[in-house]
Length: 132
Figure (cartoon, one colour):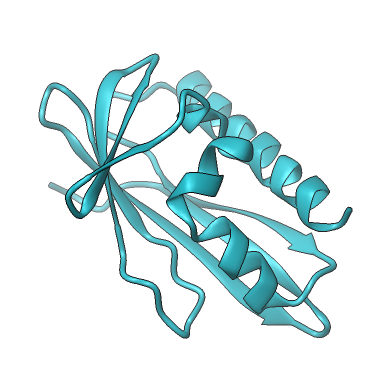
């Protein structure tokens, strides 16, 4: 497979990075801000399972770490695995939350733009929750 087109979607949050990472990195909190997981996540061994528009998906998260990495791999019913790189990094007294969106093979310009908009909306929700 050749290198896919990538787009970094990010947002600044006026809250210390460790607090944002502590909240955003907990799978049970993700349905509060990541609308693709709005149905909720149920733990199944080391993975988490969600039911949504793509059917049942299995989500495997990177272990908790001191670097703000919330990477996770989503496996859809077809067996397709999508690696999602999500980072929380310090920025002064606040932080940046960055999601690397990869354009999957066969994805149209419109689908890629819609995915980016969806991620921007979710990161905006996270910002609102964290800056309350």
